[in-house]
Length: 409
Ligand SMILES: *[C@@H]1O[C@H](CO)[C@@H](O)[C@H](O)[C@H]1NC(C)=O
Ligand SMILES: *[C@@H]1O[C@H](CO)[C@@H](O)[C@H](O)[C@H]1NC(C)=O
Ligand SMILES: *[C@@H]1O[C@H](CO)[C@@H](O)[C@H](O)[C@H]1NC(C)=O
Ligand SMILES: CC(=O)N[C@H]1CO[C@H](CO)[C@@H](O)[C@@H]1O
Image (cartoon, rainbow, N blue to C red):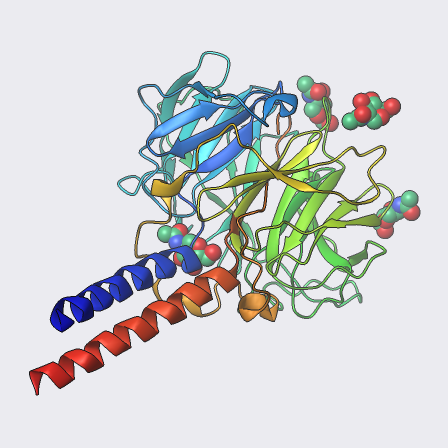
């Protein structure tokens, strides 16, 4: 009896530890995005894909099952989805461990899938952040101190010719305003946070840049502005996640930035150079993914929960309440199943806010894109949760092992 109890404890400890590890080190293998009519699309939810409809319907009912052939298996961690607004297609990255660099294309009009092959060159498909530029339909990605691009043309179905990731430049991420570009400056150890607005890539969370500032890469001129731009509010210069708010037509002008500690949601307007401070997500999860429409910021947590914050660019000025998209099932079985996270677990988000042990707010109470592109990524389930579970698992495991030792003696 004692033996069974101890065995059970040890097993429980092992399982807890495994789950916590996965949850704490990588973003979900599911992803969320929007079509051009602002229907919320949820991919890789327990082997299925869903259309949850428009925002006014998310509170109840059931989503439409849009699962069909040719879809990726969604068996890889860190899956991300991007709306190509001109084509009404969703581009899906990191969704197939067997084809880690392939880009799966979902034609949201035809409701069909194709697979675009890619030539990676030096680009590492397991270590990057990216945005899809609205006007050019080109991906820009940062990986290991290098900026890359991949031109999707106007594809809503795959082309038989592989598309290359092109080396663009070694960006200068320094705060130097002298006007001289030093390739690679301040890129060491940088965990990229890329946010798109006005065809500019905003690099956030750079340790040497003051709070409230971003380094800007101007896509149309392939040019990194030497001096950082200030956005009026001292949002922290830490790692986090970003998602651009679409407009019904034209390029995005605002993006949301959620620091890893989930303490607030900052909405940065790159026309007025101002920042609004909205409520942080109820679920604090440094690995949550985020995606935005014209009027909502959506969070997919690493535990598979989907939450949203309503946002009206004309009238929302602060605060706000996060709610669950209760229409969608939890994507529970699509957690970052793989082990890949490994060591990354230590400080997955790099310089990110030393939040991970903090706030115990793990309450599941938390209730809670389209034309010329945008970005989005991040996960939920606060580090707090992950750490908590892991510690618990570790303790239980240790206890079990110690007890086993005693028994063996
Ligand atoms: C997933 O993302 C984490 C950091 O967010 C990174 O450390 C890890 O290498 C990524 N794994 C894969 C397989 O992309
Ligand atoms: C915002 O900053 C940019 C770059 O410094 C500048 O060109 C633009 O005029 C500013 N906008 C306003 C409204 O001040
Ligand atoms: C905000 O105002 C613009 C200009 O009046 C309008 O086109 C847009 O629909 C408004 N957005 C929302 C979400 O109400
Ligand atoms: C369909 C559409 O609005 N396309 C526009 C996207 O942005 C580019 C550059 O601003 C315009 O030239 C296109 O007309």
